[in-house]
Length: 131
Image (cartoon, rainbow, N blue to C red; front, side, top):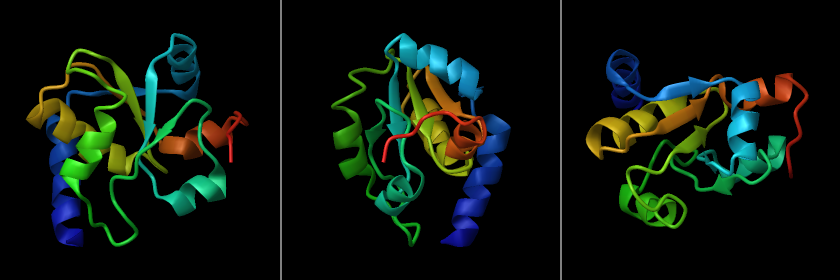
């Protein structure tokens, strides 16, 4: 499984057409009411908190397993169509690379963003998180 995820990550770096945002740029997008989807685990949400207004939808569990159908069902409650812009957040930016690539290149979402370097970059700039 780890080999598969590593390969997927390398492929993502080559073909992904989603856009990385800095914490400053993300703050502007939040102010514009863009949906922020935090794909980390519940333990990670508790540990570091989440960006205010984030929708918490775990993609990979602690073992690296996932349920795409279940995740997409929850995701579709917040992102209504492939034209609606949204931002993905994880711990360091690696998982959002995999998920963002899947959404942009496999499912055709047009405006996929992710927080560069994940929640770590948000916290390193002393930005607010909610526990």
